[in-house]
Length: 335
Length: 300
Image (cartoon, rainbow over all chains, first blue to last red; front, side, top):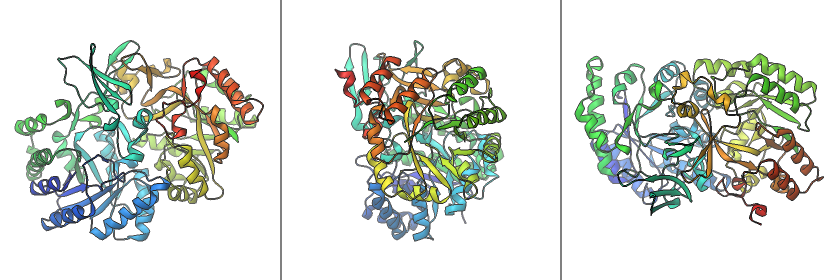
């Protein structure tokens, strides 16, 4: 029987895939080792052989595997993306996660049995958009951008036959995914085209008399005193100056954590709960998967009596970005 | 090449908007996009007001296009979008796939810059659904565009964002409200005071981005007036100028004169520099970081 709420966990490599499955993921998602996916980082992701091993391992334990092909191919790259779809079908992936309509059309025409999920990079924030992909390409599931309030998700869920998957935990994009070119503005490389945001190769750290500075392609993203914890210079999480005031103008370094929303997510029949973090270590994936498995199981047993256990929060708190949690846009005042 | 004026991305008082379009009706621009594309809370101009502006501009000989909101979240946003797609007279620029869904195979439409059309397959698909013009993503280079142009279906025009602060990102969070320590639901519409957005500087004082409600823009103005030959060679049909609070008519005229070869790009560039002393950028068109400027006039 299919679980009511699927725990969808990140796999940046084979060891991460195995620990995700071993610790209770219902599905794992992964990408190939190139710019066909939105975590195109050195040393990360799967070649064909490892993908085959991963699919075999997950299927052997009853878990599903989704392939993220969620960047937008440009003309020159089309063949590579097309081949990735063919490979996904050949490898027996349970779904491909796509953003580009042209690719969806290709997949539908050439691999009619391959399930299609609309990536968060597809920026579908309303049911008319989701139903567009459903009617034209028969998508089974849509991953919602991290910008909707819970009430908006609920409103949307009643108006589409497409399953919904939500981000539950991990890094938080403050911008609508698929609609952010900040990274390419500063560095030339964006999530849409290159599968990277604020890419490591553009980062420079420098100790100066004013403090430790982080730069992206020369642009000063932040400066830290000795007492402050320096964070990775993701462009939207830097401190900038507006009308003479220096502050986190877009977003603090913080992580999304929706544990407390679990009963509500179950009630409105959200199908997938996604954990962000293919770039994180297998140890991280194991820890997060374990906590969320436990929480989902507790919630499904008795949603009305569900309370977030302090031990879960403590464990997740230890490993979060900036060690702060937020409900993000699900909680309206965040906006 | 034709000239268009994109939708006004800012929230100006009603009188300023109306006066602005009165002025535009007299300028040598061929196409005018109007409507609120950024924030659903902005309300000084409602659809009936826009339709009045549309009629006035049509009477002045302009092609008028109604643009939809880009980030459509609520049922009320959807209602507004449907009223635009079903306006019954004017062409519509779809800035979200939800709007495309309403228009596909029913009415011809313009595919806006936020639809993420990056390859010939997607362009072909959008054209087959009824798009008669598409606006390229702002981050697209002329090299990538050329490869799409070579495979472009007949009957669809290509438009390029060519002047103004670049719309780079959308969020559901309002950064203007955040600056004022106000919740978005009680934002007091303070973005009405920032006629070109609020510039965001780095901690060493370099203008980097600009906040415009839920939208983040470049602080530098994108300016392809020095690249018009290259736009022409790439088969671009429409050059888009984005409204800024000052000198729009002058900028339109300079672009017009340059396209008509009455003015050299060097001279046009100098004249724009005189109007806007802060520097500009053109990196995206050249396949570089967007904030780069390849035009060397500043260096001399």
